[in-house]
Image (cartoon, rainbow, N blue to C red):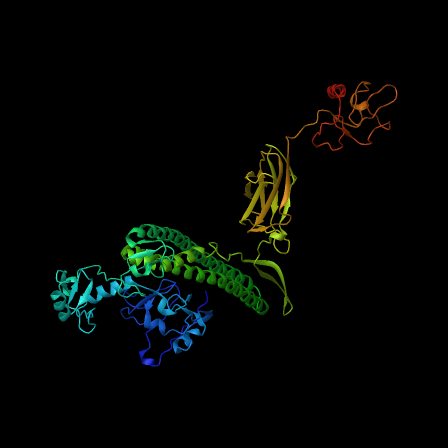
Length: 585
């Protein structure tokens, strides 16, 4: 994620909110009751889709990052109304950058005002205000005086005057009213959350179709005929779904931490290896004076460039993993705090934005394998040309395996026999076609039946340590298999290919001879599968006579290859008995 600049647009520079310098991978240690921008107690806190909370006035001062499009037209019939004329104009859909995590977040169609309110933060601000020496809580009724009492029944803060009037009224005379000082030991002070569309009604119901809390007037107005229920009845179902998302996110946090540790370890290994190669280069260059010193400087520059190249890849991967880990930790901490300390209604109000964020984080694709390796070597025997008339040697090698240059060898590449061990060899080469000379590559071999996808052979791969890998397997099912051989996730030369598994190897039952006359000692009854005969009643083949193939062959099948499998052959019972007689002879 690239770091983007965030601007604040204010008329008075002295009133500009305080923005601390943000270090990648770090979060400022601020209380949950204070805005990260102005560092003051939250005022109308709003939750961004990335689960960071800010004051509404602070968010309104942020400059939009981009325009995503336009939406919305006025549906009123009074087109002469000035306000309607303004609403007829297409409203832009904007996005801003979060000042904490630098994530681009989309604003709702109504702008910042329609962002989800963080009621849990409001409750914590109220508690912190009460626990301060001068609490300064404003009366909920007159909005002028400082609150001195609190009505537990109405969940309202009252000044002295409104408190006396509250007690004199018949409807509220029996309400439980306590001093604000007595509330300092409380860990939660709930206030009724009112409907934005119907400010006199409290949110006590939850619309399942719209996935949001509603009031009594809403269910007979905009949410008519929508399935709904009391918040206390649906909190279990929606709370469990958020816990499942939280559990999945927590599991990926551990994987990210391990991947980050591996990246840091590979970076340390590369630096150590670079230092070792640099030492070798210095030792080699000391044998020459000016020419070798110039050659040494050139080698060190190449090595440093290679180091920078590899470290840049690792730094980029590290920054991406750190940012993703930070985002996931923020989501986990926010969700845990909400599920632990939030009320049923607060959880349901925040549920949609929290679930959306956690789902997006879970879908982020990342690699747990380091993006670089320490494949750096120094070759002192490599010719490097001449410096001031001196022949110099030595070069920095960044030798890496090239899957397209890797070769498969062996007699069992394409043919094997049922229940008999077979094998082949993988020879790893670099981009120049030269053998690697060392092992440690990630080699993967799969053998899957062409017609039975659930039938596969598990091969054994042995790293010989010299750039070759011995692959052995034992097929149990006859048929054709698709064999895939890959190095570092890429197919090698000739992969994939087919492998045919036949019945067990059939041995020859006859003799490998030049002719029947020689192998049988001149027996007339001895016959050969080649079909040759000789004059004088000889039923077998002879040199230069009719039917002789002209080369040594097997008497049982007529094949010319000595070390081969016997196919059987179309011989009758009489012929087979004669062949057995030849074998005996």
